[in-house]
Image (cartoon, rainbow, N blue to C red; front, side, top):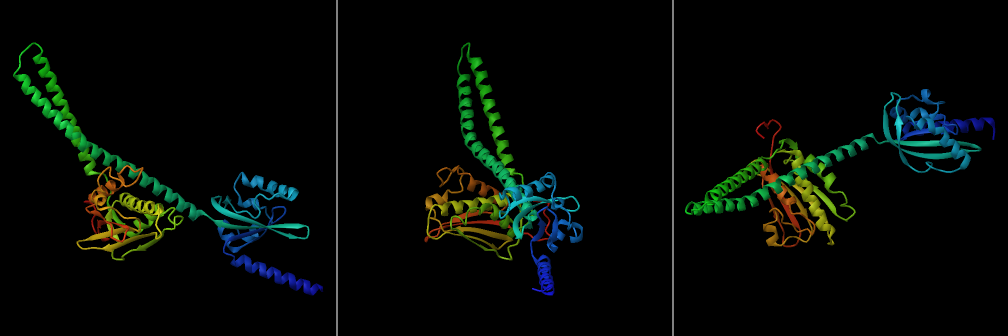
Length: 384
């Protein structure tokens, strides 16, 4: 091959490389066996903030924060000496460093190219900043929902216990009043002492009843921050949390969202809690069996400024006697359930001025419905 042919071939190869570096979607960096940068793609220039002329010829550790930058050359040296691959051909998540000193998470895949006795390494880099932000937001959202779930469960349990305890307290007070009237007809050296003890016991029973009433009033008032929220966004966020594992169980999920059912007046965390509870219940029911596993989540604009949300599954359905009392505290169809989830949902929905109910069609499956107040962008929410 003539020198002219070789020169033309090299020129063509360089042109192809430049084209690749300009168009490859992921950041791409080529280094030599001493760790020096030979080429940067256009995406890599934007990602790290360096022009190719600034970075080429410098050690690739330039793009790494400490302590990785101090250790990088040793990694290459060990590989060249031992041939042991610890990252080549294996993707991993590492930390990159931009020109301005800021760092970011990235997924790095390294490939190797040999030309004669020389080694070149190609790194393909994908910025994970948006993914990490999304994961952090999901964790934060999950934490908020879990916190609110525990708070509401505590309130629901307190309300139920208050109702149950108040009845025997009333009976105790009545018995003590009757005992005091009987003692008023009796005489003896200890009668006065007994009258005093019975009166004090009755006073304490009344005091306990007042404490219980205040507790129930506190729970009934609730604490929420109702604002104008996007219902599709609430469903999207709740689905991200609730539908984990749905695909693994062969459950197909469909969304039918009415554009007219957009804005609602709601406490974001509480309504997400209702949605997560209903979706998770449906997934658990369908995971136990059934050839058709489908979860359908729908919204529809209703009359009188109401919006209706439905969560329908293709599970075994509910017996009529179970459906009638399903929203009562401590009623559950689960072997290990406490029976508070749907009771909490009812409390939240009713506190929002809506209602919640369940249908079990003859062909099987269960459909949960609940309503919320529709809202408009210019609607005042101070009275919420």
